[in-house]
Image 1 (cartoon, rainbow, N blue to C red):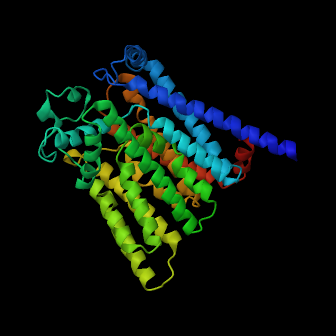
Image 2: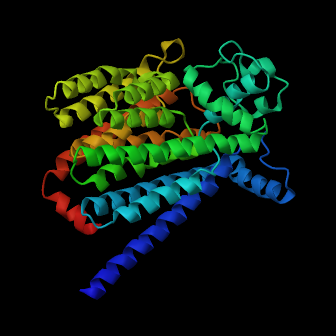
Image 3: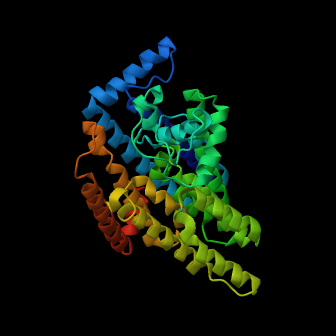
Amino acid sequence: MISNIKYKILNIKLLGIGYFILVFGLFFYSFTQVDLNLTLSQWPIWQVIQKYFQHIGYFQRPLSTILYIFIILLFYYFYFIFLILAHKNKISKKQAWFIIIATTAILTFSYNAFSYDLFNYIFDAKIVTFYHQNPYEHKALDYFNDSWTNFMRSTHRVYPYGPVWIGLTVPLSFLGFNTFLPTFYLFKTLIAVSFLGSVYFLKKIIDYSEIQNPLYSISLFALNPLVLIESLVSAHNDIVMMFFAVLSLYLLLRKRYVFSFTFLAVSIGIKFATILLLPVFIYIAIMQLKNKTIDFKKVFMTIFVLMLTAVAFTSFWSGPNKNPELQPWYFLMAIPFAALVARKRMVSILMICVTFGMLLSYIPYILTGEWPKDIVDLKIKLLIAAIAVGILIYILSSKSILPVIKRFF
């Protein structure tokens, strides 16, 4: 019995070591995508290192693509293993939190490899703190002599987000003294804290609602490779919006109505999408005030469906000139609430398949250095294929094949 326990502990440790080797692999790989016009440090040794990594990302693209695919496949392998362990209660709460926090600490210092949006966030705040102008009226291209515009994209657009986001980021710009690297990591830290905050308050909601197998539910969100990449690596502000939405929902369940609706307003003021939650929040508050029973299973599913609607609206009806603009990070709006309905096997399977498909959509850019003209069509095809595969897996897993798969892993 004792030897069996030691064997299991050893297996978990080996699994953890393998996983963190992979996390560091993603960390180092992110620096292969450093823009050629950006020098992160003038330190001579660093410049040699940076050029070495850039050479892989920009001049050995087939190798870079293979590395990316290998990293993504391994991340989903470990993700699948962790979900099975959590489902079987073979991983402790302490171990899960260590994995989540350590992963966050490592990837906070990665480069925003798969998106330039972080640079736009930083420059939007700089327009206020350095140029003393209104980012709703001025764009980065208005300051073409600024060296930061050399490694940016979308310099032609004015500020597209809500006023709360600029309110959160302007202090970071001040603290960074308009020096790029400190400001860069201050922004990354804000994103990382928002991610951990989302995990923490989702766990509080899960515990309060007495959802079965809470560790599996939280792992479905917190260890999802797309969530880790789009939040901690690419550092999209969607996760900040979702942090305030999740915090608001927790406070609502605790009947802290003023704080709850205040934080929901903060969330809406970042990127608007969470305004769809307002009717559900009002319904919950009314039912609580009337001391009526709330079916939280239905409420959480409604919230999840509403945020999927936000993903669809953002992807297909709110892009520039109303053209489709399906982006992987849009799913950050729905995945946190998928954790609250993870008992629905279809939800878990589809979230795994869809996020995997969306991460595959980066392959053409990594391979060629530019987005193909039909990239939106490709993403839609990947999404449809992922949904089809998810449905197939759901059907197969309902039969005797599931125990075989579990024994294999």
